[in-house]
Structures are given as structure tokens and as C-alpha cells.
Length: 122
Image (cartoon, rainbow, N blue to C red; front, top):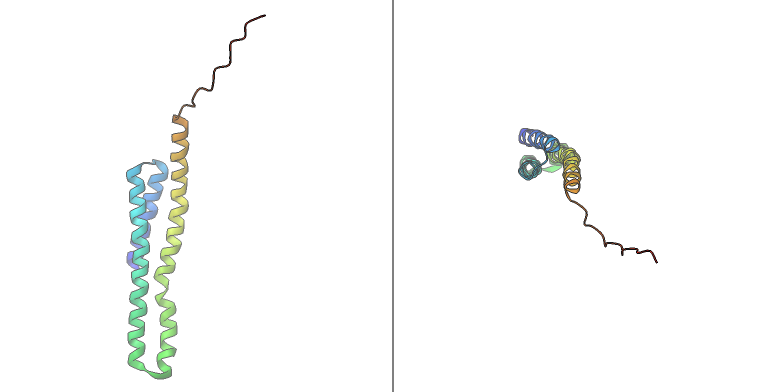
């Protein structure tokens, strides 16, 4: 669970930095840390399920099921934390993307439309 916490804290920090000063390199940091958060959560979940199944196999019988179900529940916590953290990062980073779009829109000058025909008095 610690790798998920570390990567999610980095992802949130990078997302906040991206909101404050949007740029391509900062966006890449947000994306990388977010991906690592999700991967760490997946790895923690798979490892927990694997260890739980191995321990349940050693017990055998009804005791295995009684032990495996609570262990399975606990094994899902890393991915739950990762999904929640990724949701927060996406919300924060969306503000940065919005600010980037607003900045880009304000620097683009609209093209001049067609010039109306000159009106000469008749």
C-alpha cells in the first residue's frame, strides 16, 4: 500500500503544479505518476490475492474459505486507493487542461471576416 500512497502523493503534487503553471513537461509528470499509481495499486492487489490464495491452499477445506474471503477483501484495498487517488488527480489536472485551453484561446487572434463592400452614395 505504501507504493500507492507515494505515487498518488506525487501525482497530486504534480497535478497541483500543473494547475498553477500549465506546461507540456508538467503534464507528462502528471500522466506518468498517475499511471504508476494505478500500476502500483494493481500490483498490490494481485500480490495480495496471490498470497491469500497460497495461504488458503495450505489450510484446505472450509477453513480455507473462511480465511480467504476476508483476505480477498483486504487484498482489494490497494486498487481501491489507487482508483480514488487517480480520480482526484484527474479532477485537479482537468483544471490545468482548462487553463491551458483558455490561455491558448486568448493568444489566437480571430481571422478578419470578409470586408463589406464599399457603400458609395448614389
